[in-house]
Length: 393
Ligand code: AMP
Image 1: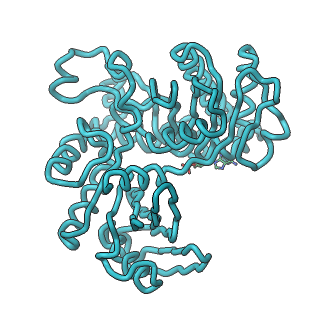
Image 2: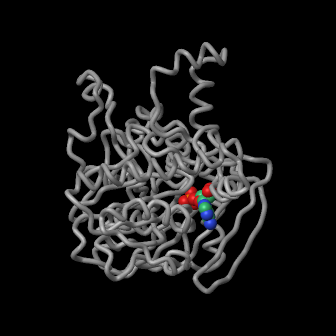
Image 3: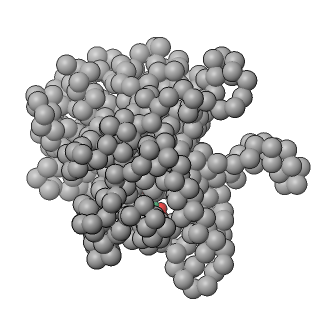
């Protein structure tokens, strides 16, 4: 039996799950999360497999310190006897540049993640800092990264290439990588079990950060995120696809430098920027219902974005057998699902209104629908844990 600690890190957040893995069985024995990492006081919360809960507040200066905090809690709770009891830590790491798949955290991996940090400035530094910290404080502990780009390694070159000088791809790695790989991979695996005959699947991971993936025979053949996590669909507060030639004009009109424009595009755009209301779709929908035209435009644009990619990907797949919604918006917004699906009636797709407004995971299309539609909760950490375990073996 292997004990694996999986980390999912955000700028100021730390989430973990402790897995016990035995053969095919993967048990989550404990999970926890820290908010406001780096603040004067961070709040943490811990739950174990018996339902025991604990919460607390203390300074957690960085993500490495977050690991130490939970290591101590797990030892006190009896789920780990010592550090040696832990077989590995695994990261849902974001951008590994030319390194994809599951890799041991070593000097080569750290150097490549540092090289591509300009392409993932909000994510790579956090992971790098945790990896370095844990390496220094626990040198014997095996650290393994599963990159979010991994599932998309099967996308053909002609679909990961921008129309730029070829040397940029070769020399600088300017190409589409795709992200949210663990989520799309989890859904692909779930669909293999739920509807084995569905060869052509589109997964819509819609949340704070959104992407759509075309999956043929379980493999990714297209996805909306590109060289960075800023592209494709527009996100809660990130721009999505945008015209780079607007940048000089924006710098001039806003009287600011490139960094400031990029800051607006990555933090104050998307649903938030367009609606002027919120980055939370629930509030934008409420405002649209109350007659706010900008909020209505934001919702309409989001639906149109999703629909456009579904159309494109249906063409790539040569038809569509199953459409899956996941992520905070995909799972919880019956409005988004129904508005997208009503436009797909031309495919013979028909949503079951009652199932769509329910809260249960599963099929939400009518029995006679030519394309099945699903609402499925994703489980990204389990994909990381599975891959970490395979690597250990
Ligand atoms: P995620 O990043 O996948 O956790 O998704 C978080 C986002 O899901 C939030 O920012 C909300 O915009 C959205 N969300 C959650 N619940 C709902 C809901 N009932 N209706 C619409 N959007 C929702």
